[in-house]
Every structure is written in structure tokens, then in C-alpha cells.
Image 1 (cartoon, one colour):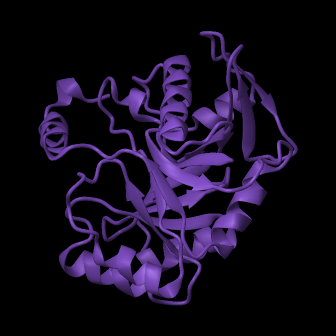
Image 2 (cartoon, one colour; image 1 turned 45 degrees about the vertical axis):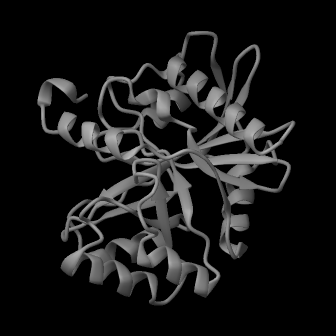
Length: 259
């Protein structure tokens, strides 16, 4: 069984060994809640322009804290190992469009420029054979931007809505999630840690269950193919409470609290 977090950031204030250990612990708790005895955890990165921790790790940067990394047969995938755990790290990018809409390009080491129109950005992501994802964001799926998101998701296909752990539990399901179910398109859930000290512990806390045994040589290709053919994915883990959501929004407005 595979547990995958489809939205992970590696900010400069995050301590990588602690993040990877927290992700494994969060995956383990989610597996226990679902009655899963054995699993493999996968973290899909969404690194913004100016960040490329994946490349640094691939080029030999040490992790420390009992963790090491080794290559796979895929350019975009690393295997992370400790004495008690194994995770897979899959490269990907987060792009901000000219309309201030976030787009994820999952499963690629290539970059896409910021500030392009949404349509152009999505076309470039598709051309990279990456998974194009429009992740939920408070305020970013409303008004004129919300209309653009709806049009993109209802367009030519192959674009996925993304849920994230920062969407408070108890809130109603956004319209794009409901229309995705009607179109038999998977919603990709991820933890989406914020650039706030301590948020590294949320990695792996929200994701999806994929009923496959991971191909250790080519997990990215395997999982991306599974996502493209899935009518839906079973979410696992937890989202934040409304109170935590409010606290996080206040913290983001104080620079001394941010990474």
C-alpha cells in the first residue's frame, strides 16, 4: 500500500531529518487509523522558484539525523532511508501565475516561469509530462480567479484539483472537488506545510491511499499513471482545525514568524 502526500514544501527554516521523520510518523498514524499494516510513504515536492532542495540532495547534500538518500532509475525520484523507515521523494514545482493562482507541476525537475497566464502555465506543465494540479487556497478559488480555476478544470482534461491539510475540517467541499467527482477525476490531497517554523511536522499528515505496491525503481511514473487513471483517491490523515487555520493566517502576517 502506498500513502502519498501530493503537496510538500521544503522551506529554509525546515530541518530535513525532522521533516522526514515527522512524515514517516504521520504516515504511520494514518495507516493505523485505516487498518493498514504495511505501507510505503511518498512525498511529492512543490518547490517554488528560488528553491531546489531536491537538486541539492541529488547532488550529494547530506541529510543527517540518521537519514540518507540514494538515487532510483528516475531523474525525479530519490529514495530516503533511515534505520527504521523508507520514503520516496519526488521532485516538483509550485508556480504562481500572472493572475496569482498557484499551479503545481508534480513529478518533474524542470522549472516553469512565474507570472505567465494560467492557460500558458498549464500548457507548459503538461508539456513536461508532469501532473498539473490547481491546489485549493483560501481566497484564491473565489471571484474572478475562481472562475478561471473552474474553466481550467472543466477544459481539455488532465488537470487535477488539489486539496490540502490547511483547509479547515468542517468547511464545505469546494465546487471543483464536487465537479471532479462527476468527471471521475481524482482530487490530490497534500499537507502543504506553511513557511512557519514548526510546520515541517505537518509533512505526510494529509494525503491519499493508493492500493499498489511501490515500484522502487520507478515510483514516480507508477504513481502518476495511477493518478491519471483513477476516478478518485481515498484521503488519509487530517486537516487543520478552524482555530489552527486562524492562528496560521495571523502568523503569516508577521515576518518574524515566517521562514
